[in-house]
Length: 453
Image (tube, rainbow, N blue to C red; front, side, top):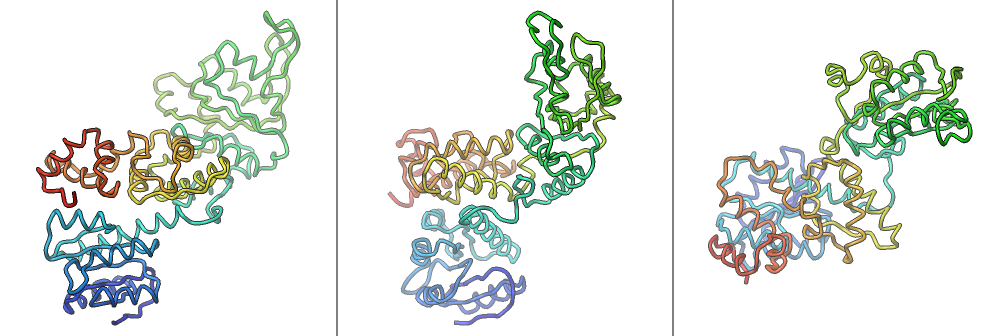
């Protein structure tokens, strides 16, 4: 047994009965500042694992006495926080399927390049880190600002923008796709501003009929229209001294935009049925999920109003551009809904996490929240796997594979991944694939994937 002492991040154990292979792998890995242990047998490797915390094991398949498959199974049964890669000089489809089913995250065939090795190592360690993030006990710490969760650089930019916006009373425009959290940002600005003790009044401009919007915003006097039995203040008067949030301001008509422009310019409102302006001290924040610049060019949104509300701009990134934030959000929503339902917090299989990570999330954080709530409600076991996910998401693992492969190659890889995700259970695999068990058996036989019947 040998160890190279280099202070760095992750710790890797390399297992191979060929000394030259150990030396080459050790040299390549230590050049990247990994801490590296080596072992020439499974027994020696297990002894190291019993004594030391190891992040990744890279093991050969064919070794004397006990092979690498037994080591992988030992790790999977005993070491939740250790990942495994398999290397072999005897590559077969059957061997690859067996290794993946046993729990190997990567399968490399000798000879491989240094770049292939290091890329596979990085992918495997990144997957381990994602799982640790999801399974971290207790509440999230150090990554929640202004009630928003995120550690990615796009969200750090949002947090900095919120801090600047909160220090002033200037009008602001918050843009972003549906479900990205525009109202949360508006609330964060208000409650960290000098106006925090006064009301925050959100108004969904797209949900109020056009004929009622003016009355809702500015109020009306008694007798202004049929049914106006008493004088009633509008949202602007209610928000006096505080902040009004005009959600989806792009949904307002051009005539309503003229009235909003007057409020921004003169800081007073005229109630429906009255001619007397009333002063209001209100900060205005607006949001949109549309391209207001494009609407201005099409004469669908007033240019003068756009300039008035576009003093401070905060652009919210879609979830698909926030990197590992999705894992933090999964952790947060899982813990929250499990507590609300009085259930223990479930774990996610690596395959399920990969699908969730690769999905494009058109509904952004709101969609993720709904998916996690559904999973907590509908899943009875302690492990959430790929078949538990909504059917649309099960195919997201095929994204990003490029367009250079044949249909048969894509199908073979997908069948192999589905089999691995359900631990080789053909009945469950056929259900995920949407075919009967006989058809699956024929496909396995055709591609020599039937490694274990």
